Length: 345
Image 1 (spheres, rainbow, N blue to C red):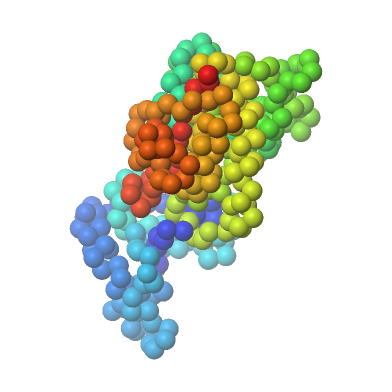
Image 2 (cartoon, rainbow, N blue to C red):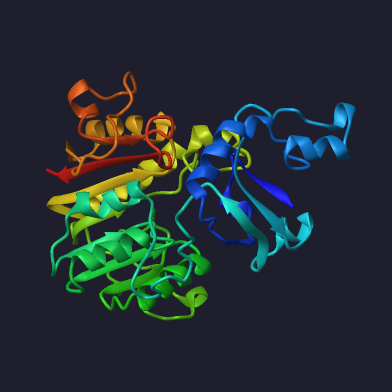
């Protein structure tokens, strides 16, 4: 048996095995027990009273390290090496859990796509209308693109791009699974989308490695979604943070190149959402300030407002801070996230 631990750094991408939940009928009572007694539970051997039979002295941990809480108990079905390396399969059978909600894997397949709350705010802020032409510049895994297409009632066009073949296939699979024929998925480097010379707009070639880089005319999209690669410091839970300092420093400039391209592809009066899953101000508020100073973009409230205002002293005025949304895990029980909404002048 094992306790299932959660820290602020637990990354589900590194825990590739699946969990099977058996909900305890007294889960409310179990939740109180775990929350009030978690610091007295030994994370090696189970409850402290049982641990004393198995370990003594330095091996026994009377209290959990700071920042770690127990969210459930279960039985490992495979050893640790397999659990941390297998791409699929059952890793741990949960016997007691503080959460009452069951896992949603494969539930209502083809009818539902599970998203985090901040991500769901993005398509609603964009507010697309049926018949419009939308570009999602960095689409994978496809949640925002398919959500946008659904808000358009399947009418118009959502062109979803990503740079790698694997990610393109993931987005295309979701679009097909959700029966959204108005989503066209292409492999592309979104820093090189502008059509400098006459050429075909794109391709639907399913051989992604052979597909040419698509190009588009300036001001050819009604609205644009931009959720660029970022340092992902807002993802939770995580095992550890492995973002090098050089990436923290260079990522904002890479994102600004995409903002430049997006502003040229966007029609006048069109809306552009800029979002990240990081809490780094350089990639959020400071990039918004850069766009306002250097691009023909005006900031408008990213409604509906669900998150908090932007961080102070990071390049935005008090008025503009209230127009963006910042989701801080320490303040709101979500992933760390940032959302800004522009309109092209």
